[in-house]
Length: 115
Image (cartoon, rainbow, N blue to C red; front, side, top):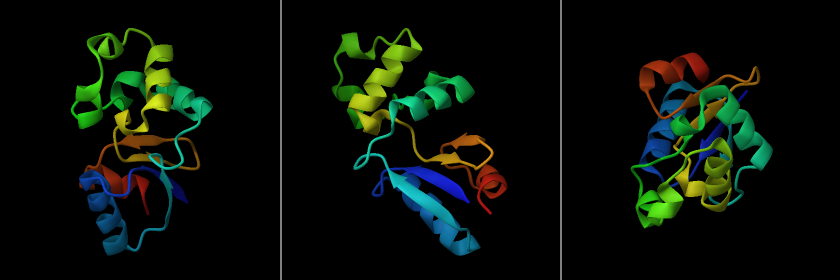
């Protein structure tokens, strides 16, 4: 079973959900706008794929941050911002039981993670 983290109404998430439905793929959904993401999970993700991969610098939430907040130089600052503003986390984040991570929706890659 895989876990898909994201925000239900996000366009990338809608594509991911449609892909799963079309391919009969089972998954567990975690809405991090409603439930957040635990700090320890974010730290693990950052250690696995890097905080620069996780922080969404193209979204509305990023544009609303002050220049000081946007000046991320460390993993700890990135994690603190993602805890405070879960919408800063790119979507979807797909996590397998073995700890593999995929960030973003790419149909070609999605099939190797979600079965």
